[in-house]
Image (tube, rainbow, N blue to C red; front, side):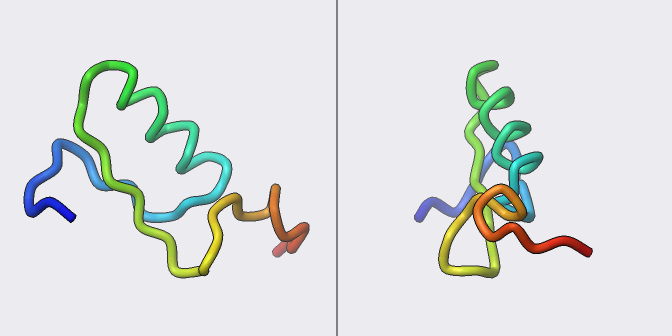
Length: 49
């Protein structure tokens, strides 16, 4: 893992991954941090608040 990124996204849910993808397409160096073992959030788990 690198020490410096342009953007750090906290949360690998649907919105976090979309935001990270758009920023990466713009040429930014992006890191996504997720507390669970898998990304996807509610789209993956089906959990709701």
